[in-house]
Length: 141
Image (cartoon, rainbow, N blue to C red):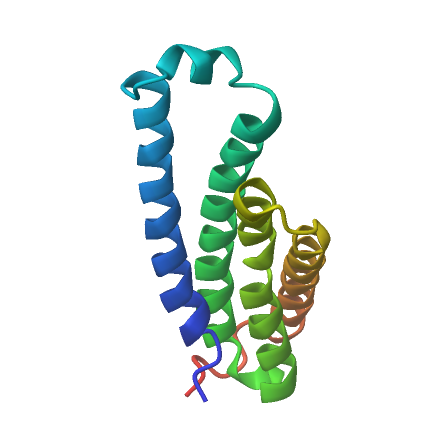
């Protein structure tokens, strides 16, 4: 199993989605029909949360790319540990998605917390695996 493949693929897709969302935010602040009101409330409330989602979505997408490439190199680490790290990294996308859910749908912040914990656990587990197994057997198949 190519553990890490989905982290790379989803990381790129999520990154492109949050890049497009960033373009929307630029449009709303610079060219939108109510740009003065948008700029006036730029650092508070929903506008601030929207920027947080954009930044964290991009960061977590890049983290998934890095996790995917590292996990693909850790063939000697064992499938269960690598699969757990990969799944936690993917679950980390719940954080920026949860922020958007709060802003636009009024959802509970529980998804933000779950995503943050999952991504932190994924990075921690992948770091431990890299320290233990880096260079032991090339890439995973």
